[in-house]
Length: 433
Image: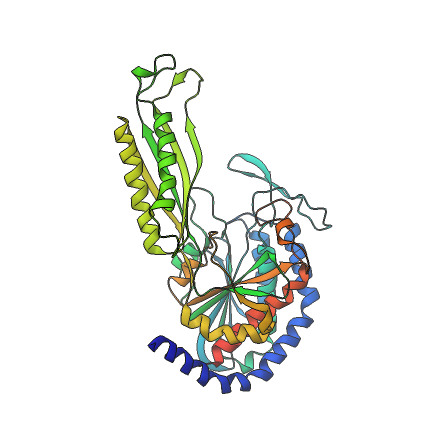
């Protein structure tokens, strides 16, 4: 009840200031519309020249040149190839950050676009194509547009805007640090200290012109696990002489599936335990001495996440012991839950409705995909949104998904992304906290 009353009071207090800020927001909307052709051109250039995580040298160069042309303070080489631009408003006030990710994926594009990627590279020793198959090219273009829009109204901004262009959201190669975690480690949220952060992600299965959000847990944590099963090898004709790690591994796989179905209270929180690989042996008639499983754990609640960690350990080791084998379990936390600060979300919801229209803004269900924006949210209040990128009237079920070779985006949705980022920053700086 206290939280509800506090939120209601906050929104009541903010209403007059929103009205005063209406002229500024109307100007932001006009400027964003004027930027459309430029934003699309940036996006197409970036799409045609994608770069993998921690290798975004060309992309970072384009961003640096643009931010400097706007007269912003610019830091480059942050967390390998990251870029930070600082816009100081005409009046003192808080600091708000806006973030975009820059990296592509090791994937060969299957689209016939005139600006389709033809880039080839080597990834983990294998020749692959490189593609913006998750829309990070649109994120960079939209944030470049928002920087240009806000630079034209900076005298009316009571505070500072920090533009964060982040490498390696999709992850870096094994053994190499990167992404939001390294950006935070290198103090991207300091000097000046950030009070709140906003980010957007294009969504290929949602119509253009729409915004989707969720207070609290919006995207899942993502952890990798490895289970090494050690048994005793034998000839395949004499299995009684073995402690078969393959059979044991199979039993462990089935046992792990009971964690979500029988231990997680699914009416409260969704979760996933997936085994993605199993490696054992080199010959059909030899029982090997060991086997190895790898997989992923997804959760929308940190308490459930820790519950699953403990269950994986217990089940794997217990099943192995019952077979006379041993199991060594390693769990590597990768990305925390993407958790939208509930008070900040409530405070900025009227902004979203004003920008897109109330009918075009809706709360969505949580998803079990992961996003390293969560590392910023562990340090400061944050709000992460989805911007529609699917042509109107298209069936989401037949639309190419993210991380696929046929991934496509309707570029008419980019202006809403620019307007949303810029208006969130402006309103945050003006409205009471």
